[in-house]
Image 1 (cartoon, rainbow, N blue to C red):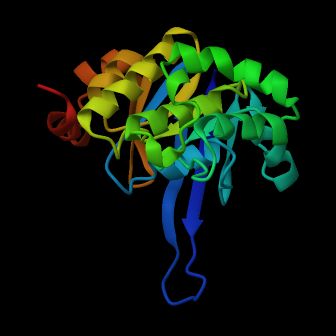
Image 2: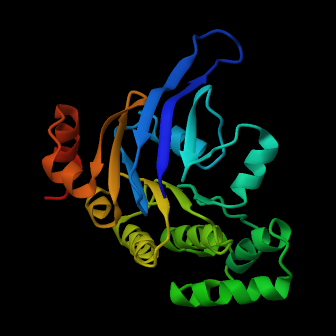
Image 3: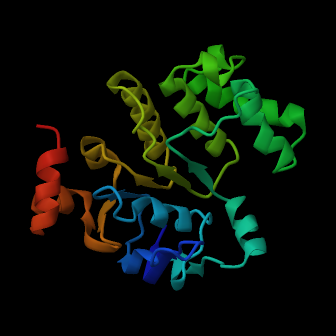
Length: 250
């Protein structure tokens, strides 16, 4: 995928008018090479999640343009709905339906959004459930699953619709180290299999292994952007070096 972002602006307005608008993305510019994975890092509140939501078609900027592989991202709702059907998005809060089993959570978008017959949908999810060690948990509801299992089911739900690319927003932020390792292993396998993705994460050691390029987002702009090796080992931007000293494993 080749991503080109120019002049991206996103503001949030207080509906009551009591506070001035907050600019979250401030003329952001980012142009990647032809890559399989982009990792977004930076301080909390810097604009990473807002940028990811725009890339996933879940939010619309006030100004600027986004294009994947030379195709501009639409701004009107009808076209955005069509675009969202071609990508998968995973949030840190899982967003699984609590009254449905893991299997039913996987089948729901296939049957009701993408129009597959239930038999075909069940056949599509069977192999990935087995491959990622989740088949034994397919008939459990989310409350019966560990955090790592819930997040892996959430990733599978995005994956089984056969998306053009995945967008993942801090998928391990609410997990303990053991559960984090489960999810990171799964993402690593997807990367090795050629799945394209844009990932927001604070797991810098993992970013080293899965990122083709890394962008540092702070104050609504890109302060640094490079290949993973150049970013992690040779970036001289003081704010980035300070960030890496506190986040890279020793």
